[in-house]
Image (cartoon, rainbow, N blue to C red):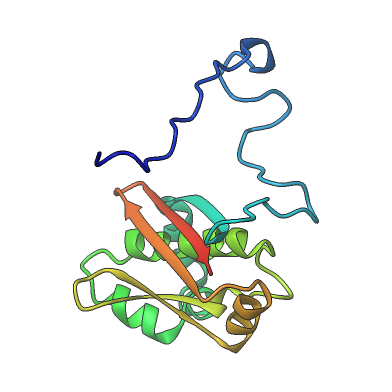
Length: 171
């Protein structure tokens, strides 16, 4: 029988509506806070070590670039990322997607941006098919090893107004 070894289906349990605020998210927060500070996601037993997501307004990146120019670009993006994005007719949505990827990566690492991970520690370049390829600096590679991961995978998307990225640390 072809499905003899298929895993049993997960039992469906309806959510307790009382625990949700009127907007449908859990009470007590916006719903995007993730694990409490100092606690990491419990992903034992799988190949995923950490997950992060970020949504960035393109207008925020556009305003920072207009206000600070090349200094902003140098602080946030590697020279390779700048070259890749600035070659586009409108580079700002692509820059915003890369900014979101850096934030998502910092969440997957469980560190945020700061002492352990700089914005330029994670670069998002393009592969042969246009797919996002992650390049890590020495600090990020050390953090990758410390977390027991071998790769950081990302997925990016953007509209004219919003940029989003997911990041996954895998064994």
